[in-house]
Image 1 (cartoon, helix red, strand yellow):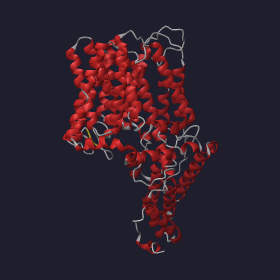
Image 2 (cartoon, one colour; image 1 turned 30 degrees about the vertical axis):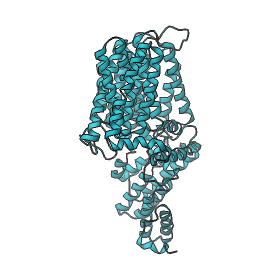
Image 3 (cartoon, helix red, strand yellow; image 1 turned 120 degrees about the vertical axis):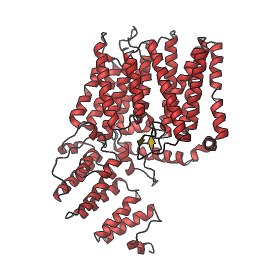
Image 4 (tube, helix red, strand yellow; image 1 turned 135 degrees about the vertical axis):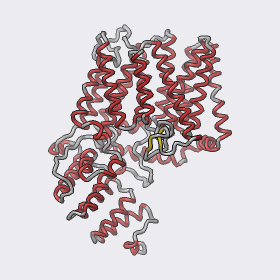
Length: 585
């Protein structure tokens, strides 16, 4: 019971602390889950063979850790051409910053990842999710059902709070009406409505399964209670206005209903149909009383022509070009945001930090090797689930239906968003998947049936101290934050440059910091940095505007005119007084 209490407390605390998106939350959470996993491992008496799932999971973590290891500059030529050029350019700039007195001397160390800070956060997230899945795999059967019920209780609270925050008592730029955020449109504990709706869509099928099960077991009161829970979650999902969440909810509900009808007798099938019919209540209410919901529903008639769809399609197409330059190891986890601006063909003001399609982002960021390992892990999990489950156990069938609904919802939602990178979302999914594995492997002829078990957990726990020793904890996990970069000192910006050599934001703000310093040659160095920023984001008209003004100050008329022409191609309405004569030509 203590383990169950700790697990649900972790989920609840993560939900309260902004879904765990802050490194200040994710770091201690990882430490705690590592300690809990190691404690559970020590209590486990049964010995398990080292299996394919364990080895592939460990290999993925090792691969990610290798991409963030700081490497001396003499190893730069061993990287592929794009990484080598980026590292060399950054190292040269750092030496120039030292020469003009902008920063003190230090030795730059680069890594394979193009966003070392972002990769650190993904590693922490993976350790959290693996830990939680490993721990929930040890729960007894009855406690597993209780765990799902407690997860649903938390989701219902989130649904109510999200609806209030979105429509009744606006949250504004705050999470839980308490924590101010600079970006996004928060709903409950999530940074946007898509993540909010997607999280509820992942858990809504579980409420449907529990309602059906209780009716079948002749517990009408409990059946009615979980039917109401399903209705509340469905209503909140529809009210979120997230089309991706709507699709995830719809397909996961249909998949759950199909699974239930195949596994139950006729009477139970009729009860499940009654539960499904409850969907009509929120649909009718939303479509008749809220114009915005009706408009969003109507957009499905011509969804491919919507602005959102067009931006996604263009981004997906442009993103595929990245794989040609980073085929084997990818850009590094979370490295997309640092490389995509070089490849985009649209000058839209929307800044894509994610592709919003995990099926494309994973191979781009982890490369061929990482993608193969992830496929092996998922395939092995499916195989273990098939050979270990007991189809004759009512409780196990209930858990299977809940997990199936969640996986379908996540699979659909991952095609349209990046919610799986949100700690609360990922941890909830992994905990549900852990419930589908046995704590004690079933005796079969297959020697590799142990799954992700606590006896192997120490392998993952050993990786975490490496992060603490090499990267110094929380500070290293936030160096890619735009808010941090804007306020960073020149010395910090140069350090950030070693973490993300192709970050246009770092180059841009380093250039501005140099100009503001007033040191000899500071303008020349600032111009060089801003020019480099335009190479890493050539369709950013603000960069060209700033570069025009800096070159005018340096009396580089030819360079200013060239930058102005690039600016006018991007935004014809922008004018610079000193260069207006070019418009007449």
